[in-house]
Amino acid sequence: MPPTELDVTKEPQQPDHSIDISQLTDAELHTALQSIPCQSGEDEPAPLVELTGLKSQHSAMMRCETPLRFQATGNLGDYAFAFCRDADIRLDGNVGHGAGDGMSGGVVLITGNAGCGLGSAMTGGTLAVYGSAGDRVGAAMRGGSIFVRGNVGDDTGAGALGGTIVVGGDAGKRLGDGLNNVTVFLRGKAKSLAPGVIEAPLRKREEVRLGLLLMGASIRGSASEFRRIIPKARLDAEEAGAGEIRPNWR
Image 1 (cartoon, rainbow, N blue to C red):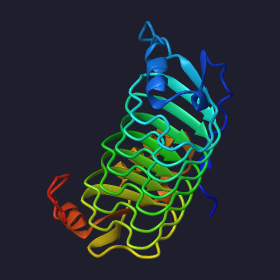
Image 2 (cartoon, rainbow, N blue to C red; image 1 turned 180 degrees about the vertical axis):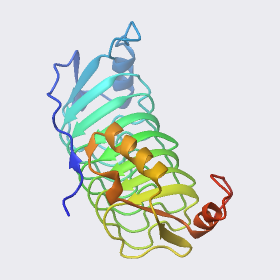
Image 3 (tube, rainbow, N blue to C red; image 1 turned 120 degrees about the vertical axis):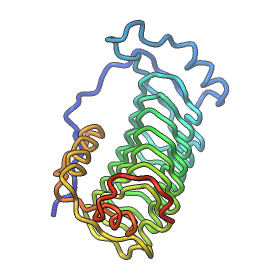
């Protein structure tokens, strides 16, 4: 079965600004970004900023809250884009551990691979990785959407309280350990599911929602090929006609 595909039809755009992050401290980078005016009208796109000088720096673009568009090529270290909000970022490269940690809004697209803890404790936004990711993807997340085109490691979704996790490949052990009001969509196979978590049928409503999420993350793939991984208590409530409710499943 072929994996979900990255939509690479978009042509590279000419940036409005270029910043060499290797020459700036974190404080200087934030000052430089804040000096760039945002779009003047609702119909105008935000300015596009090209980031250069990527040398696997740790904590790159942490706490970026500027509503700008960014594009960059190269690799970054741990905690890239942590606690980001409002920004629209595309990185053609790899990231280390903790990418998107605590993210609360915006869009981050990473075309390479990610380490452990991708999207941990995030509360909003869209975080997409077109390669594979390590252990504990989406651990303790409370909102937002995480997409991984390839495989994920062990303990994906551990302790997650809200949001959506989409995995286009296979998952490791203990998928969904302590999962709460979260849906994991899995296309491949999991080495094992955590206790109290089961594979549930993909309802038509969920299939439509997943299809829209895939489109929003620029991922090609049929939603019908995925399966839902949810707490067993949640499925029991659905079958009993309780509808969509928000108890503590743990």
